Amino acid sequence: MLNENIKKILEDKIPDSTVLVDGDGSKYTVRIISDIFSGKSKVERHKIIYSYLNNYISSGEIHALTIESFTKDEAAK
Image (cartoon, one colour):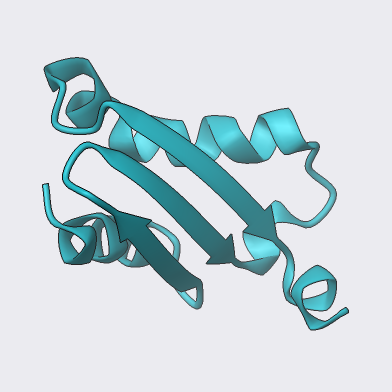
């Protein structure tokens, strides 16, 4: 799976988000900034991201995923 594919999936699912993806073909780091995370715990934030990428994780296209999730205010600090 290409970094651009992951970026597009997340941007389509989470409008008004900023998504950066770094990866080597199976291991990825996703940094996503969106106010959808406001008031949510780290676990809740990760569940949101995983719900959109679960099919690719299950199929093995994504082997490992590191998630950095922030609200716009958190990212500005």
